[in-house]
Length: 479
Image 1 (cartoon, rainbow, N blue to C red):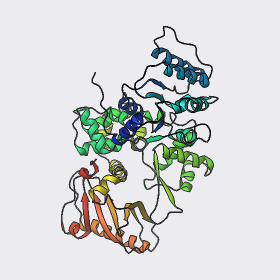
Image 2 (tube, rainbow, N blue to C red; image 1 turned 60 degrees about the vertical axis):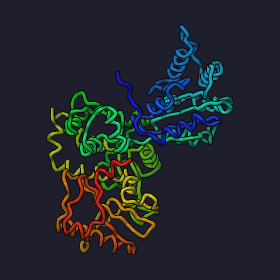
Image 3 (cartoon, rainbow, N blue to C red; image 1 turned 90 degrees about the vertical axis):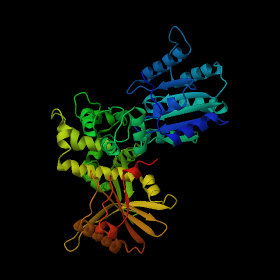
Image 4 (cartoon, rainbow, N blue to C red; image 1 turned 120 degrees about the vertical axis):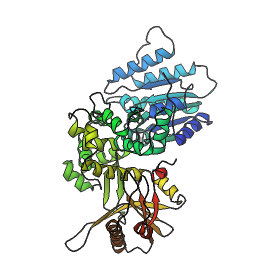
């Protein structure tokens, strides 16, 4: 079996190596959503250095978690019989201290505690035990303690922002994000899968940059075939992943799913009030908690419309798989073979792909700024919308870069399977959008249209007179 190679994650690897080579004790928190590759990153970066590793068991009792701890320790000490099960986490960490002290070591100790939220279940003294371990012993040792969890909100609230024994004990923190398009392409290359950038984007729009999902992609198949096999076939990994995704992260996921379903119905995003009305989740503390947890876990993003920094905050569903599942899989799960072959030819697909491509572009703002040669210019990204009235037209611009050098880039993002042609009516519509934006905002900055489209823009009189710059997939796939 070919060994998997760690792809990308350069910044994260630097942080991990700095912790390993520093002259002081380090407690490193690694946070990221389910299936994003946290465990693989840590095990790869610290290969040959990990002295003790344990992963929490989902929905297990305190007794079962402690049995798991005793078993892991017995394996490392080569004991014929499992050692006595500790009565609580204080005793467990005492045993861990004894184990580490007896272990000959010419480099830093590394302790890796995975899926922390599962270990620290209800009526558990895990946080107190971990605090004891760190404050009474580890802080004075040559050690790296890596704590990891998929429930990002729990990790931040209970550990990173702890006001008790772990207060300010985290020395380094990694928020592991899904792969970028560049990392996705590198990942496929490492697996000897040859796909064009256009096919990779199609797959990314359905699966996102989640390594565990992308692992299901097979070489020799088109994007349409892979999506069909992974999401619609009876044996497909993602056919029913949505049902397991949120319960694995949140203790009471019903409201989270209601909010996700509500946001999936409006691509431009929703205000809190609109989310509450659509999801039937009361607009109060419960909704605040749900929104915070979903955003920390990377499923939704919040942003302000242009010029509205104090009110009008919008929330948008940015998890590609959740949107794809709700738009297509859930409604067509029993339609038989080649379901996606058919659905990918419909008008619904065209609308969805346009929205999904816009979302991917927004996630790749650093690459866009680099392509425009404004990487060193301070910018604020936003969206702009104006509702139409009986007498005036409304408009929507999904991405704006407001620059400190007195320029505003207005973006039009089109997912098109060949070179995009700007005709007279489309050009007039863009001019009208720009005029409405200028009239509403009263800006005196230079306004420039930038079009992002997979295969570029055909140069005709309308493009030459209106569009300042065009970006293609090459720009989005930059490192």
